Amino acid sequence: MSSPSGRSVRLPSLTGMRFFAAFLVFLCHSFVLGYFDRATESALRPYAFAIGWLGVEFFFVLSGFVLTWSAREGDSPKHFWRRRLAKVFPNHIVMWVAAVLLALWAGWAVDLPKALPSLLLVHTWYPELEVIVSVNVVTWSLACDLFFYLMFPLIHPLVRKIPVRRLWWAAAAVAVTVMALPAIAYAGLPGTPQLPGQDMSLTQNWFLVSFPPVRLLDFLLGVIMARIVLTGRWIRFGPLPAIGLLAAGFLVQVSLFPGVYSLTALIVVPIALLIPAVATADVRGGFTPFRSHALQWLGTVSYASYLVHYVVLAHAHTLLGAGRAWDAAPATGIIAALFGVTTLISWALLRLVEEPAMRRWGGGGGSPARKPSLENA
Image (cartoon, one colour):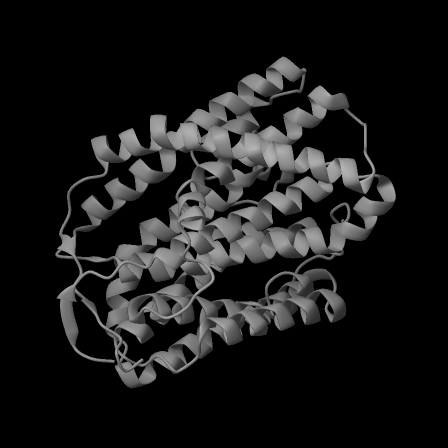
């Protein structure tokens, strides 16, 4: 890897990869919200949760990588936080209000004292399920994201101080810690009462899935992997082998490691290798399967899609018949149609809320960092 080239390098494939991560979460929820008949849903459920965790884990690692890659020279914490808040909150507030109004329309109970923490994105700091999943279920991950963004101006300078020769050791230490967390949760946290449909307790699930300081490790791993690429320490490992490694890790995890081990322990390393492999291919102009214009567009609306999809799936099922289920083929057709509806609403949210908010409040800060070329990577 050579010295800085003096130009900022875009990573279009990482935008495309965002779509796949969001789509995995969409599939997870579509599999477990009652669209499929009981036998099909029972067969899909173990894989549904696994792909959902895969999608969120990917988002967390990718977020650390992208923020490090795009860090601005001379940027202040104030400017950074303003941009991230302008990105996160407008869409979230619109969908939070929409979810409350739709819940009231559907006759569902809305407990405002338990719902308000989710509006402020502070609802995952304590293991109370009714608070964590209140209003718009998916916002638990935004609470983690918000913590990542608050910590990034502190984390990034510390990671930059790690000697270049020790970056891989630092990445390995973080990855091993993430892989050990399920064992820690299994041994040290109460195993009862279990969550419905999962072989783990609420406390174990909260600790591994939605407790922000724990999930910060995934984000930190992404930061370190970006530094490895930027400092010329990336290895010759392409996107296709990385995808194969991720697929193998996923299959081993869902087949052999049930319960608390069926979350992210065996996929964190493949994810941490896949993201820089694809980024490196982007910079060098090499092949990646994520660079098409369609995938980039879908990746651009992925944040809005993530916020919209659960509300669409839940209320569409109410409209089509609460408690009704369909055989595999018609259920798949319904879900495909609802993905189209989700995408259309997400595009509208992007154009009418997210982009105007970023133009109004997301400016300022330092100049984009000068990125190195990767001609020797």
